Amino acid sequence: MQQPLQQLQQQAPGSRRAVLGLGAALLAAQIAPARAEEPAPAPLPQQPALPPMKVLRDDTLAYEFEYPAETAAGKPLPLLLSRKPERYSSAAPLTADARQRIVCELADLIDAVTVSVTVGPPSGILKGRTPDQWTARQVAEQVLIDRSTARITTGQRVSLNSVEEASRQERDGLPYFVFEHVSQGSPTLRTATLETYRHALAVTAVRPGLDGSPYLYTLNMSCPQELWGDLEAAFQRGVDSFRLLPPSSKYVAPDQDPWRFF
View (cartoon, rainbow, N blue to C red):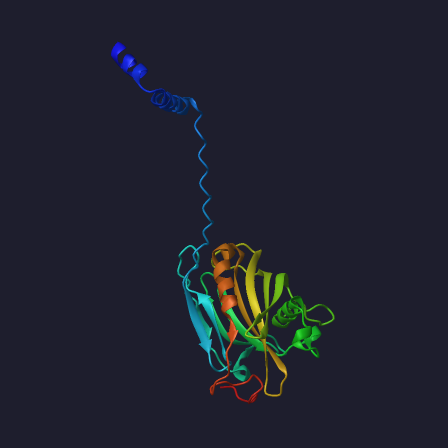
């Protein structure tokens, strides 16, 4: 031990100070408190994957939309055409006054899921006013009234649907009215309870007929309340995809040849 100490003492003062400084730095590093590591950034929430979608296009009335082929849980959704796309004059009326008519419908009878397109002229508060004067809620309520067969004692038709939300959008320079609604339904094969509810998303677009009068085109996607969580995202995508297409040579306006049934 004496020899190294003597060698250290014989070194130049500057060298001794450097060695001592290095030792002090190492000692301080050993006794200094450890620095807290910065927390890792929280991962971004992942958007749920949308189920596979299919596309339906009708050149007769010039519209198209997407509809789900599966639920969010991965269960196949066999939506089959219960009413093939057809012209307005030959379509089945929803009510006795034949204002709104079903021009296309898909259905899964087991799960009671339906996707339909209806067409008809505006009525009630919408009639006699231009589309730029309509609010989304007015359109939603009037469309649902025209789809309903319920009437009060005065004979006035009323809607059994509750409009949850309604908004107006612009797509390709045209107004689209999107709304969510809930209604009381009938017992299905999935449940035997008497009191059931259906949840739906819908969108209504406006297109003039041959004489310039407006016609409402409504896509409605509906399911039992218990399936809403599995289908809401797919229904939203379907409603967002709904478009009125530029008329082709196959296009037949709603008021064209009203006497034709095929």
